[in-house]
Length: 115
Image 1 (cartoon, one colour):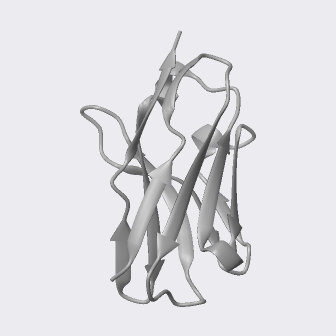
Image 2 (cartoon, rainbow, N blue to C red):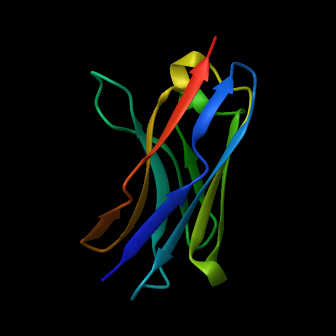
Image 3 (cartoon, rainbow, N blue to C red):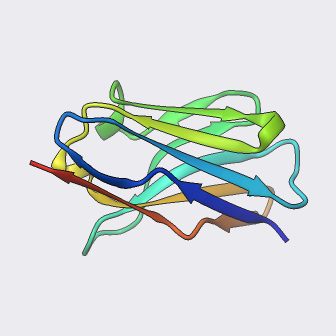
């Protein structure tokens, strides 16, 4: 059983910063992709950023230059450093872990950016 535990969400003013963390536990393939998705009210869930176990990253255009994804493979933990936050970044952020046909989600953490 794989479990993903997220932390680091909260309320921040526009222009501020937050760091999200997600720790995975259980039987995990050493070759995988960890990522962050978000879902705002009334909108579909969208990819924010992802990083492979080899360190390859992918970002949504809307966060490029502001967000940085990183991971610690020894700890099975992925981080999302979010800078220069905007009100449109307000959403529930979900951690995701996948390899092959396996796909697991965290419970979500709320990020609210006030103007």
